[in-house]
Image 1 (tube, rainbow, N blue to C red):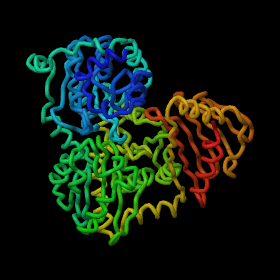
Image 2 (spheres, rainbow, N blue to C red; image 1 turned 45 degrees about the vertical axis):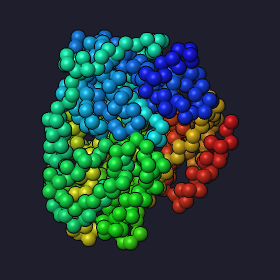
Image 3 (cartoon, helix red, strand yellow; image 1 turned 30 degrees about the horizontal axis):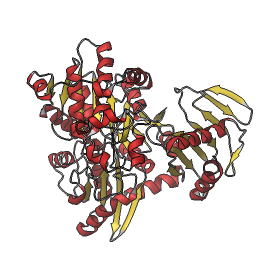
Image 4 (cartoon, helix red, strand yellow; image 1 turned 90 degrees about the horizontal axis):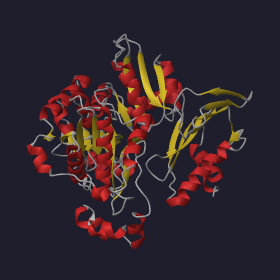
Length: 552
């Protein structure tokens, strides 16, 4: 098998990456197969069926074409790509294979963001969308996310069906893709109109309406990704000019030269933004990840005086400030959030008389609920969000949308500044009046087959043991989303959970909750802590020691 792949190395698009790998790394690509999971495909570059290359991309494209042809007489697919290595080349591979199998591919000619892809699918009434991105993963990763006709990522049932088509293709080297330029001439591959971008910008501007005060200066950085120049164009058209761009960090570059990982969940990525804020006397730094679905913020109070806000805190700020903005809107309001989002979000919503809809982790479930509620005009969406720095205020897109949220945050920052207040004042007021919950998310990594087994063993220990207390906190109930049951510890009763089944366990205490789930895209186990305790770091350390590190 290896020989056949090596014979086509020049066509693989990954020759330079393969030649820089160790022999062990090269061999890993031939020892496994990429599987299409609930979040699509995400992997490193290399030769073989277990790595991303032209042939594994064609395999996904052919599987998608077969899936769509089984459902529709004629289908069109929107394809966007980010600034990562090979993203544009992979998008052309996808388009060629789709066109060769009777699907009309509508392709972006330059990099675009994930929310733009989600919007375009809905705006152009396409049957599916493809986003070439690995979001906030390290630079040696890329991936393929598939979207349904509602603009959300595929739900589990549809994802399983698509996976079966992809997995049944056992000869990726033999997939024919046809001639790209001929397909363009024949209109089987088309380039997306600028009208789509203009329509998206108009929707974002309608959400924000206007930025009344211009006193707060903001630093923007795209972390070498896709949010600029689109964001600066929207802000300028909203007549807000009091921003500066961290130029070195906003140059599109798949090498991500100024950061270790281009992820706004990591405070370290703000080092250049903070420096520029000090130099320009800016009060806020906003960063977006490479495909502009996530955002992060740091607020500045003086020379080298900053506060970083985690994903839960940004969600709480947006909840409260958007609620205040919509005060004259008399419609009942609701939020949609994942079950691992801060306990404080639920309690803040209760204090505001806002309805809460909890969904499983993954924005596709938020998207699905928004689709169900889109015709319920008697209700007003306040905010949809996840703790992992993903937010949506207006369902013009059906995925996390940093492009629409950044102008909104700037609007709120200016209104607070006008009144002598800050985001820090706002979050501290929430903690004072609602509860001082502390949130942490840990993601220990366990590589290879041994890692897969260890993660399975970590999860099984909680299912095969009687657990009445964790880190000195009494367990009130245990929600096991794999079995679909919640068990009340006090009276030993069991009830059914209403959400779909998934490999996630949540422990409920008077102090809040701890949740665990294996990552769907990386060799990690995600640990979520949302607790009203004095020393959250002591509890997370003890939990890791007792339940993670000591498990073989």
